[in-house]
Image (tube, rainbow, N blue to C red; front, side):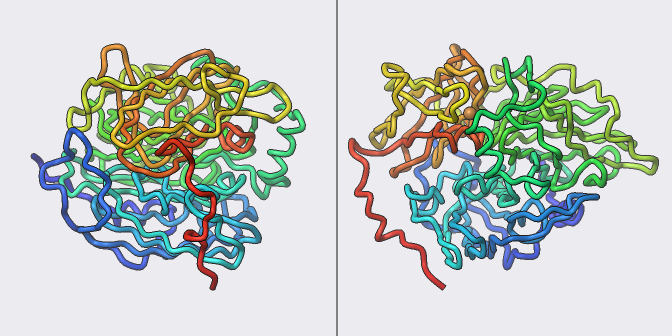
Length: 496
Ligand SMILES: [Cu+2]
């Protein structure tokens, strides 16, 4: 196996992600021979080096590149500090809440201990203003993740950052890696996400319909004034620098609230190696669509020149833009034509789980669920297939099951459905679909996923369109027939 090199410090310096709050970092090894085919139970004890980080959620002012906005974030940069830990290592993150309202941090995609999941009112009491909370968890699976507030509309501010779980036995060979975080931005531009939600609930619609053939209908609700790559607009874009011929791993994260991005690198094809942290049989494409909450890792071998890295806001006639530079020369304008955007696009059906994480076929208990939503009155829900008009508050499961959740989208819009605390396998007729934790379900479509119930607790299952989840497109996957005692006396946040 070729030995990969990870000049992560270099990529951090080149990126715009803040890193000042990282207190300690280290490397360690745990997995000697790759990931087992059936995932080991979530480890409760760390054996690799620990990482400690202070996350202070507070009002801040951020420079998006040519425009300063007042918002709430983890520091004065977007994204928040990148956290890196070796698989099996422990992340100790102290959250200080200097916001004027409750908050939590959710570690998106991580098979985490229930009490550390950051789901307010489910896994913990929300952390009040002037309060704090110590998150401490083992990151069991290597891959690309992120963390974000899980309270109200806070995700649509700057309360998010990347979480990279490194594989001590990384099987891929590459020279460098870049974390590429995508976002749709409106906060501090004369409105804020709470006002946006209130407008949607009152029946507000975009001035122009936002439609996408690829998404089978409306692409979203909001024409954002800005679209960002690593917190920067196209006017002052992030610049990624490397030498020509180098092979780079891009870790793509969609931290947006209402925007799918179509990502392409001008002059290059993308080799997709992972989705939602987990490896797939590599596929070469020109572009891919990434929904909110999804992650894709791709490899590119860089040509000689200066290239546009574009994340087109699907159906919204706008784009996020960054520059990839391997030689001198003028950067292309943000409006440059990128033909790759209209070429071969990754399809979910192209993805096959890497054999190391493919659990194989097996009998599953089927649970039919319906994604539903009223047209204009701001109400959305997840229902049992038998009673599609009735919100289903909880899906009971037992530990050690293989549960096939089949989602039928009875709305006119697409939904990226996310399950906390687990990964699932997307079902394909021929088997072998990718492991994911967030899956796009198009209008009128049914998508089935197999969940392996290896992490007892109560887990949110919801649409990762922030505005849909705020309107109620959410249920819980809960272990046992009955929900636990709602008393959260044992999860009260500390006061400081
Ligand atoms: Cu949705």
